[in-house]
Length: 369
Image 1 (tube, rainbow, N blue to C red):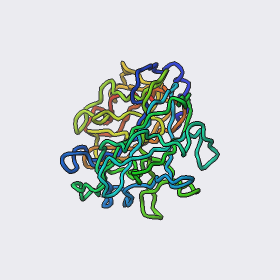
Image 2 (cartoon, one colour; image 1 turned 180 degrees about the vertical axis):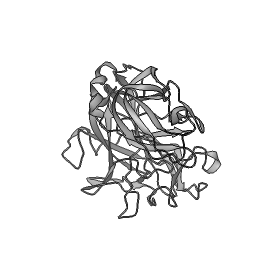
Image 3 (cartoon, one colour; image 1 turned 30 degrees about the vertical axis):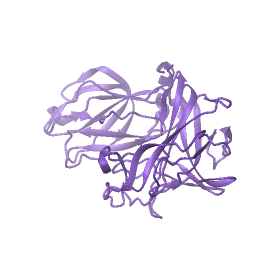
Image 4 (spheres, helix red, strand yellow; image 1 turned 90 degrees about the vertical axis):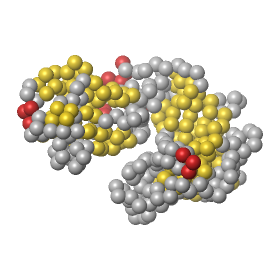
């Protein structure tokens, strides 16, 4: 999809947000089964018996700190506005260990890919950001999808403060976080049910970087690395998804976009799951993408156009037997996309709709953090 066609909209659509210390950025969740683990706690399931994707086979990737080397993980993120990061949160576990167990966290920020010409602009891998005893709060049990009650991999969230002597201030751009820890040895990847690939994270083993892969070679399943930043932001654009207008009634009721519960927002650098419900099985939706038009433009007998002007189009898979069409849309990184607002509306053939055409309501996506 050609986002560049609409980037001129971005400059007038920034959301200004200056806040007290708060969550600035979340690179993705490890939780696949909220409340589905032992004792009603969250589980992060490795899907080694999938129907929808390749077999996943990695519980977690090594990020063990060793003086002068060891393994490390890295992943990219986009900054919209200006961030002052006060805390960094990473996730790790040690099989069969009793938490809390994270005794050391080592982080540095790169201004480009660490395996392709980037340079370190903040931090180092010699300063331990854990200043007291072992830290960690329970995040999830890492399990197999067929064994959610297993408890021997307790993932801990370790939140550490940025040293006041070396403040971390980031202007708009694309950066990479590199991390290592002690106590914990492994970091589970960002995980979603029925999703094969969650990102483009890297692992360094001694001196060699490689893309993370959660599948048995030669199959591939890229992975994002879970981490969070906390602090304050000025002129930050927050990612927002909102429905507007009305869908049209067809064979299976009123068609609409499914935004999820909680609502899924279009974060830069992450996939956005487009999902339409109440379609017509076997019919393929054509999505119009352009400027949101709230009042809509009546186009009888076909319905109401909620996107005008239309900048480009996108084809989605045919509706399945449950009358659902879904597509994971890769949202690129880039500060030039911060605040870009796009409208989305899908049309498809349906003999049960007036004029034999059915459509969704409008979907307004604001790209950001």
